[in-house]
Image (tube, rainbow, N blue to C red):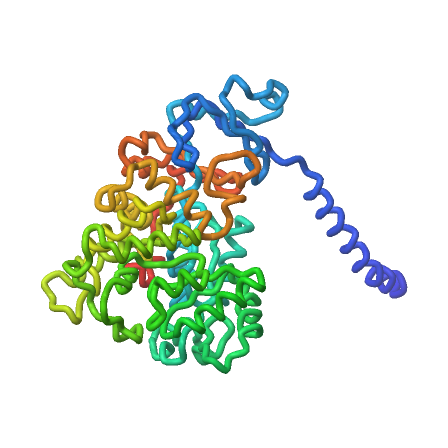
Length: 458
């Protein structure tokens, strides 16, 4: 071939590639979205309403297009759709875990394994409560695009007082840099330019700031005000040391984590540093407690969500059984459940967060245990526990308009189970398939976590 022709071909190649790529993108954009009718299931919609048998849930692409009795599905819609017989099954919103830590010490293989187990177990969204956002951003993208089987991942950028960053976990999450001096883990002082600090946190792709520890009430209030001014949510430990639960609620913090940390409000002397927190004695907290009642009334008025994490205290009881305090569990599970019950009875929105994982060999993630503890120990009905694991999880994420209940216009995030979870919350383990953003994950296709994937799960 003459040299001039080769040169012309070389010059034309970039243009041809651009045209080809453009045509592919246009074809993807104009391709009809698949319509699927899940027909005949009993609907438990996540609002706390009674189950409705004989329902159809119609999905179009990633979104729920219609929720109606089977007989009310338009015939023309049914002719154009894939119909899935869900008779005998129960359909619920996808579950939401509002407290995980995927990347405190980043390990992509282990993270993907945990996320795979979660989505095949009915979990369609997780709220990560501080880690290395460099790793979390990539995980979040992969989950969103369906590149890996995973719930959607929403994560926080951490803020704390300078003294907190002696914690070795912060060094692991900021590896290659200095903890306290990176956008996802910032040390805050009265001299900090909070407008810049919040903007830096937003730039990590995080959904919120997590206020962790060792900050006074004035700084908690200032961080919260600036975050809200920039359209950013604020999540926090329920005691920030020295900022108290009451001060955080008054500051407008959106979600408080860990039920037992609320107990410090009722103690006459309160620790001033996270690493110096003292054990909470159950006998000092009345049942019900009048000081806690005031706190819960304030949470209800402000719309503050409680991310209770009852399971983490149950695990603490196991870990420290027979050992003195300190060291030991700073709060017994009995008290955590009692506080959670009082909060729920007072009308505080309670979400289901775990702050831990079941062993790698377990077929289900910790969220199922958290929901079971809410029923068994905290006095929730199964319907209320389901609401905590769905609608209230969406509220904690400020995504209630997009997920958390089964309704037209919301994401097609669903879990189908074979046994009635309103009779026994443990029936949520009878997963047949999960639908996340319209994509179905059959439980029979689940590959358990392999030893080489386990990482630090165990």
